[in-house]
Image 1 (cartoon, helix red, strand yellow):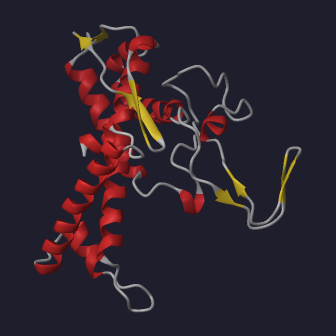
Image 2 (image 1 turned 135 degrees about the vertical axis):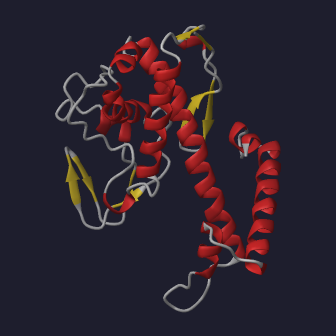
Amino acid sequence: MDAVVALDLMTPAGGAEWAKLQDYVLGLVAAKQADPGADLLSTLIGIRADDGDRLGELELAIMVIALLLAGYATTSHAISIGTVLLLTSGQYDALCCEPGLVAPAVDEVLRRQTGRNAEIMPRFAHVDVRLGDVEVRAGEPVLASLEAANHDPARFSEPHRFDITRRPNPRLSFGYGPHHCLGAALARIELQVVFAGLTAQFPGLRLTASPDQLPWRTVFADSGPQHVPVAW
């Protein structure tokens, strides 16, 4: 998984690592088909579509890989980005003093995390619609910028300011409606546990490198620091 996350999948090396991961997951699918258990993969194998057909092995493998990447890379990046934001904004100490701020702090991290990459997942208009001065015809694709939505001055006061006390915080980091992220609730819980534990155990945490010098990596629609050097 780390190799897939670190490499560009459009390169030969990245494609080779993707093939290895896919073969590994296909092996897991085969094992669970032979000996199912009380786990997500076994449940997916047992689900029947409306027409009575089961998901194919390759479909299952791709779904599992998508869940792995979505739940692994995005959450680890949010932890790294959130730590940098908290430390560079001077609000890490505030969270140490007021643990009850962890939920709104996580929401603010999510608001600021989104958008560093270009938008890659298009939406398609169901009907003709006008957005500002642009006419979008039914069937045409639209690349909706979550970063723009999360920095909309009509919805957020001082949108470029990182503020862990921001309430309400109607950020669209997990999408909206039928496109809302399947793992949104789990991701929020994970981040709240991490930042609550981090501030409780390391109240003197500080960066040992300039934020501008941190190397970043990009994975599909997400990105984050490769590492965040700290001391305490």
